[in-house]
Length: 226
Ligand SMILES: O=C(O)COP(=O)(O)O
Ligand SMILES: [Mg+2]
Image 1 (cartoon, protein in one colour):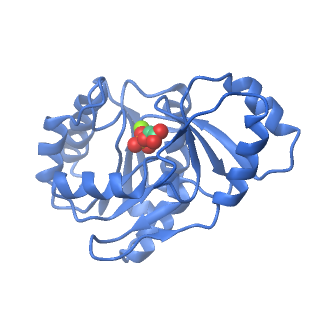
Image 2 (tube, protein in one colour):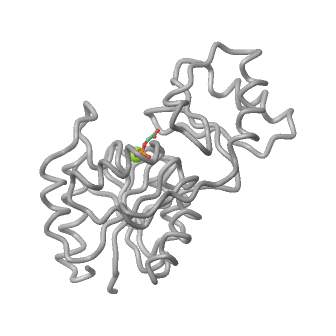
């Protein structure tokens, strides 16, 4: 097997347990000859800044696939999915006290603080016609369109890079990485990953957080896959 690029989640994958950037994972990514795309539930400017400061090329998938850019000097492409999420948010707000995260900058979905009953909210949403779902990343609960995810974002960005999604190895830690693992040619979950991502992973590292990302890259190198 030979892969042409990596797509790497941010929170829980190249961070430490306290959410600081994991410097060994950064150093490891800097040594790679293949392109490294960051894919995150975070807002676009966060993803672009992280890519820039790591020393990557600026190709990012943000807002769980709702926003992508292929280079720093190109504007983001945003999906028109916020309105549907706002409708679901208004409905849920009648039942729970909800706090939006980064609402000024988030253009295609809504991220919420994890301080309400997720299962109850899911059950309530099922009674409604909205094409949205609630995804828990362990860092936030995202109200997102069912038509958008990191996997579809990867297909779009891969095309912009002249690649296929299957040319990528994906590294991640949680439920919002599942479709990205399915779209990519190979998926590696870090040990702190949740059950959903470990189920679809081709390989699970022994180490957690950024140490797991380093292990994942060393595993690929030792097999000659990148
Ligand atoms: O935005 C989140 O909730 C988590 O971010 P991540 O996709 O980089 O792990
Ligand atoms: Mg993550």
